[in-house]
Structure formats: C-alpha cells, structure tokens
Length: 117
Image (tube, rainbow, N blue to C red; front, side, top):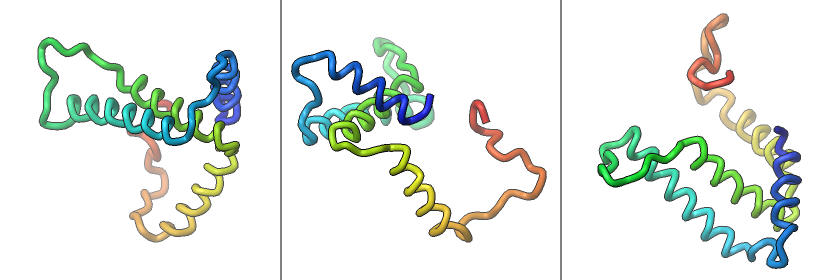
C-alpha cells in the first residue's frame, strides 16, 4: 500500500463519523499513548522488563501500525501529503548523512535484517 492509499483509507474511515478528525493536540496525545504501548512491547521483547504472567501478548506489528494510523490521521487533519513530505525528509537524510555511516561492501546483502527486503 502506498502512503497516499493509506491516507485515503484513513480519511474514508474517519469521514464516516460526525466527529471527524480530532483536534491536533488530541491526536498528539493519542500518538503519545500509542508510542508508549509500542515502547512497552519493545521493552518486553528486547529490554530488561519481561511481561508479567497476567499480561496479554501484544503484536509488535500492530503496535507499529497503531502509531502509523495516528500519524496519518494528524497528517490528514493538517492537509499534509505524506508521500511528498517523506520524499523531502529522505532527501534531507541522504544529503546530510552521506558520509556519516560505513557503507556496506559491494555485493553484501543490503537490508537482510528486514523482513521483505
């Protein structure tokens, strides 16, 4: 799914309701809540704080997707084209950090630690 498709799908879902988009500060509060849930799950999986026996398992991918949903909601509420914004931010990183990291050797498996890469 392209970012634009995600923005359209979120807009179609939210537009079904009279309340529509929440105000920006309410969306930001929701984002912080979702990032907290993601942080908790990452800490349980990779940090020093294991889950209690009575805690339900969470899916990391759904926690990440919850964050994405709220970010898309905020962008939509503010009229931001995330595809354009993301292209601009990648241009910034690619220019600013061009010599910052050690390039992989030619022929190495770039992205091998990422699913789908």
